[in-house]
Length: 125
Image 1 (cartoon, rainbow, N blue to C red):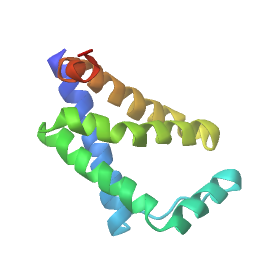
Image 2: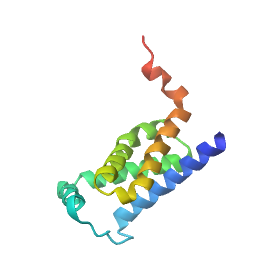
Image 3: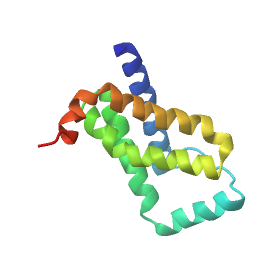
Image 4: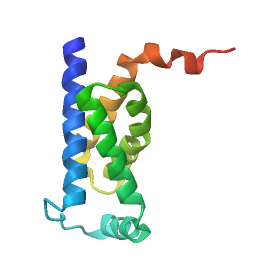
């Protein structure tokens, strides 16, 4: 089980680091968008703060996953981002759904693998 945790954590960390660094340094060309996803993407870019915020969180959580430090906190911070990745791909770009499923369920897997760290949050006092 420890090997699976390390593999999933490392893959998610590398993916988050790659996408965030690529966003900030403009390493890869923007994919051509059409239809509803294009309108959604234009709205995201028009907000001017949302994409840099999400990519900054991805960068910090990616570093956390790669180094293995603060993974419990990083799992919670990145959960809303992975949920949005899943829902955006489910409704707007279903061709990218396999990657979105991996990211979301990988995050859920890491949360459950560190469940002992979260138990006190849900304990009745």
